[in-house]
Length: 160
Length: 160
Length: 83
Length: 83
Image (cartoon, rainbow over all chains, first blue to last red; front, side):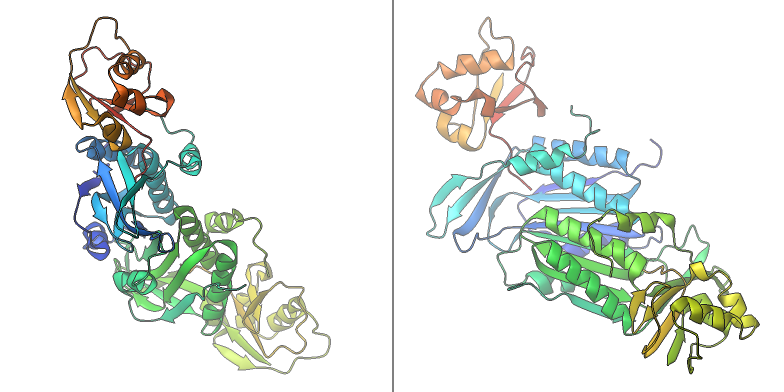
């Protein structure tokens, strides 16, 4: 597909910089009309949690998010697509995940970002474990029915 | 409605700072799980344009966007909502509009930001005029059928 | 009563705002548009397709059936193209 | 063939990875799960509800009917909870 953009996918322990990542997609261009960003943050669940610990499957995490991102690129006319997912110990209020979709028009940017998040939730090999306010390692977070359903909204997505 | 947040709506000539506006909604909090931003940028339409000029109706612009934002607050469980719309002369690559929606969960943040943009397009009193690459003031941008249709997606929104 | 005009409505009428005394018989927004069109060529050109004219009374969108009595400020403009 | 385990599957089995020689008769992912469960209490506990186990072969999601012959790396893990 000529001219299709290459998604920028990164799996990292370090935090990311939202403004820098948006600039990376838009600086020096005048063909981007719409930029949608999604940032997922660690919540403390009303003080119940002191941290989340994110385990991941190195190699597959990047490969799987890249597959989902390429599906988005094939489906919407995007000018740029970034997905960054952190792993390791993450404190309440800190960033977990960032998705950025840039396009000429807003609907494509909104839909691509939302699509990427829905599939990232259900297909990217990451697992969250809660650490309680008392510091003890607690339960693995259970996958939700709602997340599974959200991914079914995009019904013509080819499962591979 | 106890505890409902107050949207932050600003109409200004100056540019905005995406990162600063996100921080304003999230810093020092641990109950925000999802932040969606939408930035609308000026395109040059393949070199055809040198600038956009945005005329607005002072007073009503802020009032109308506030009405739409309050509708979003009533409709989704939001932790924060910001809308900034610029007016005046805007160059290709520069920002026109920013919407930020913060929530516990991603679907509410995505939907609220998308809703706000759809109604902002069709109800906020702003008018774009194109300035050609040769510097002459050109045509007023025409409202599109597509934008009008997008606002009809949110069918139980009470027109007032 | 203050009238305000924006974008190409403003350009065709040739002014951004004016104060008018509402004549007898002008009850609705529709009546106001008909009365304004008869004033001169600029108004006539601006309001030639009344269905394309959006109207706000006291900074709130209204449709063309809305009564104008008691309005402080009535604005006429094309469909919005912000965002 | 390398097996990898993640999250509570890893914890219950008590290791993150191991190399195994695939025994005769283990054709599909489903066969592999049945064979592993019989190994000891940890595996049995980890794989007690096989329908809850997600599987990747060579870092690509597969379902339980997938053949395992020729796989370099098979990973077993719970439903994902990233994002």
